[in-house]
Length: 173
Image (tube, rainbow, N blue to C red; front, side, top):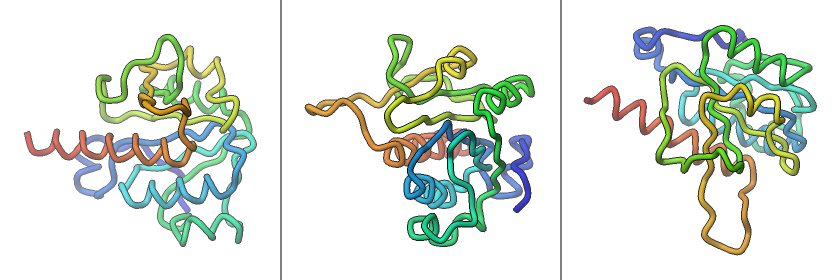
C-alpha cells in the first residue's frame, strides 16, 4: 500500500479521496483500528498515520472489523506519534485534535481547512499532550448523557463524516 500523500484540493477532486488524513495516537484495540480503517474507506479519507502501539496490517484479527479496508486506504506507520505529528505539522498540515480539554471547541464550530490531519488518541489516556500543543484546533463531541466519552472508533466515524460533509458542501458552493 502506498504511503499517504498530501494532495492539492484539485488533485483530491480528481482522485476521489478527501484531502484529509488521520493520525491514530496509540490506539490499543486492534478492533478499533480495523473499524477506523473501514470508516476511512467509507468516507474516502486521504490516508491514515498509525503511530505508537497502534496495530498495523496485515492482521487477521484486524480484518474482522476492517473487512478489506486495509487494502484500500493508504497508511503509514510511525513508532513515535509525537514525531509523526511534528512531521505533519512541519509539512504545513494543520492538526485537528479530537479530545476533551479546556481548549476544545464544539465539533460543529471549528475551522476545517483542507488539507488537514485530524488526530484521535488512546482509548483511556487520549491524545498525547505534546500533540495537543501542536494542534491548530482541538474539538470535542458534546456529551448529553451520564457517560462523558465515546468509543474512539465511534468518535472517529462522527468526525470523519463531518469532515466529508464539509468537503462536499465546500465543493458545491
